[in-house]
Amino acid sequence: MKLLPLATALCLASPLTFAAPLHVVASFTVLADMAKQIGGPDIEVKSLVGPNGDPHSFEPTAQDSRALAQAQVVVVNGLGLEGWMDRLVTASGYRGQLTVASQGIKQNRMQEEGKTVVDPHAWNSLANGAVYARNITQALEKADPAHAQQYAQRGADYLEKIHALDGWAVKQYQTIPQAKRIVLTSHDAFGYYGKRYGVTFSAPLGLSTESEASAQQVGGLIKELKQRHIKHYFTENQTDPRLVTQIAQASGATPGGELYPEALSTQQGPAASYLAAFRYNTQQLLASMRE
Image 1 (cartoon, helix red, strand yellow):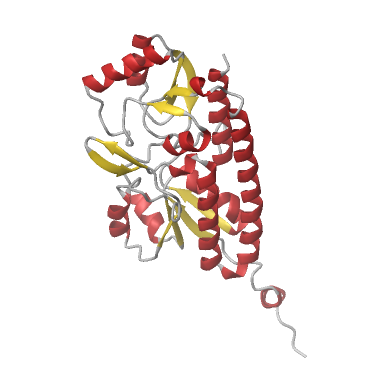
Image 2 (image 1 turned 60 degrees about the vertical axis):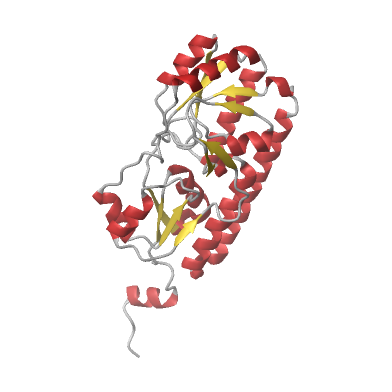
């Protein structure tokens, strides 16, 4: 009887042992981290927008185009956040279906410059984060049925962590008087967060960091801050802090810290994952309200 070479025998006995990981591309770091938590060792994830990067003003490179062309799963936020994505898809030749992580959430609509626009920052509510996680889990299961069970288990474990952190945040804010739940930030990235946890956010810029605040808007915001006796203001890691700092100084507010609403920090920073960023942001906000 002729024996097969050892390497061949091992491959036949366990064909999935040497299977290459699924190539996943996410539009920005929050989605990349979610995919990483659910995909585990069965996937490789690339975030187009890097740590501390702005997903509104991002400019894709040729390297990003090549990464997208090779992707088996592409995860985007949708809701108008990635205005550059259609151009990148066309340039890369990617023909697969985009996984829209926000699919199924209740959209928050706002008035901006006389128009009704959709707020894209849905992940900042953990109730929506759970929807994102389910959508990403389903996309990975569909693209890689051989590891569907592993994705389902990791997805379920991740949802438990999301629900636990969400419950913690709800209870923490219940200890804060409503009149103290008012915050000044750089731009309108916390609309869903505010609705979920009962916090009012004021910001000089609109939903996009590329928008510009008029002198009238800035003056009105300074007046509002003085009337409401807001003590602290927060900058954001992905935006220029100069305007919000100027407004805060004119109103008498002092620095409350830096928040991470739409870009994670590096691995060495305080917001290296989606859940770490949420906890860090919430702790910062709560601390300012308890003074």
